[in-house]
Image 1 (cartoon, rainbow, N blue to C red):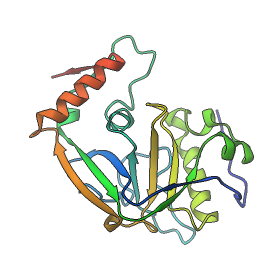
Image 2: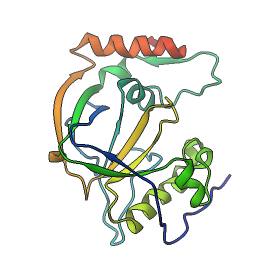
Image 3: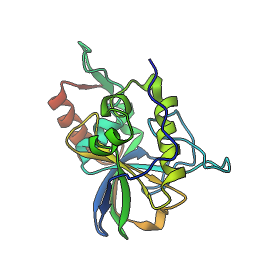
Length: 211
């Protein structure tokens, strides 16, 4: 399967503004700081990593509007909905930390929702709900948005794993770590409340934590 390549230039997006003081949630590797941008390491994701027009990697930071969305978009991300048995190893929680952030300034995000996507000739199912094997194609849209829409601090869309909650990606050459305040962090090894929250959310989706 292939999806449509972004037209050039991309124009007239709808924007969502995250006001200063907006709370965001991240579930991230414990080796990363709470608001640290990924410089382009690790496996490909739907909208990262990518490079700017000069070929320099654009750092990225994923966050969500709720904890449950952050859990589903990370720890539970690769569990197929049709799977008969759904399990996640406890070790996958132990290596992660849940951080709550607050925005320190207004952030302007391009909305990847039907109104904008329809103008651009691509469906939400193709861009947001498509298989991970197509990440090499979906990331081209993040590249094009970054290239053509200079006022965009990042992207926002309805979580594919946990609708109707929002998921966001921030461009690290336009948003800095200092644009966030860390409210608190709790890691999966030392804070049992985080493990409990993951386990409780798993029960909602029929996912069991195993040793």
